[in-house]
Length: 151
Image (tube, rainbow, N blue to C red):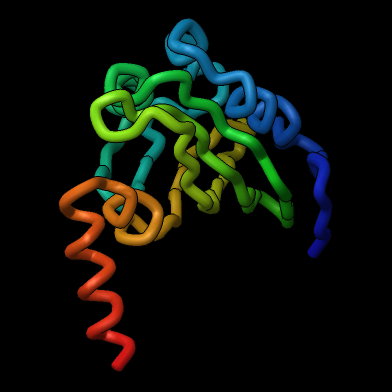
């Protein structure tokens, strides 16, 4: 297994292109997601589980509606065989709840198919800590619940 803070390029898998796609993601780029995702790719995160290019496009397009100036900062990558694991910061503004930039820390596990396209995309991040605790009313409740759980 290789570890790096810069892209690890494995033969036959477009890892550098995938990292670039996420670091420069825009609404226009969402239309070209089929260039890197397989037609029947699966996507899962704490809120969604979908299959297929159209559904994945819809999720990414919806992100640009929900938050302002979304961007991913890739922190590290590890590649082995047909798999890639990235750690990242997702930075964005939530005009309805906060004026300062928000940040979600997370990781993604990708699997590539025989054609070198993403067939599985699974995001891992703590929705309670990274999102709910930052919301005005819900955040207070989540922090209380966290304190109670620690006792």
